[in-house]
Image (cartoon, rainbow, N blue to C red; front, side, top):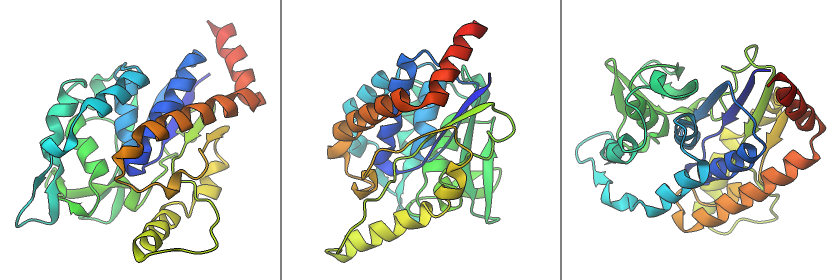
Length: 260
């Protein structure tokens, strides 16, 4: 049984994927392929490198990101994201194909206006491209092309798994609760942005055998690192609950156990 998992983008909310992966790891499940956008590419890279999800979470909590972020004066962004390279190089291999399991990273080819899927190449640089929010971070150059956040065109890159996996698990961290009113233009813009990247989730979720979607996660600000621990544990508990109640997943566990 080939099992794939897709991890959405979502800024700091992407920490939810680490909670989800921790819960899934407890079941003993084995993945044949991981695909992710933006924050999902980070979580996916750490897992594919064999780093325990809880250790990956602890690495994030120990890291003072502000030390690595510097202004990108005179360029097409406020910050140069590539200064965070040391964070990744300490825990990850140099290239995508050197990971312990297959990983596909989704980014946006800004030069050509197309979705790009990377299965090989420099790992850290590709992660940077996938996470490069336009206007906030300076675009990443790969083979003389500009690349930005994969979420611009595909925030839930399930496509590389379709037709190649027998069972697909989806982890998304952008669920929005219904609201009666919005207070402040910042919240209005944030909600509109999340609605935009969620626009095709209903269609894509139909390709998932199991979808883990912690409720209300989309209400958390993209850069609110103070909510990191809350995000991790909420996602972990939601994943455990979803796994326990999903019959197809229980059948999958039995099948994988028999195959061993």
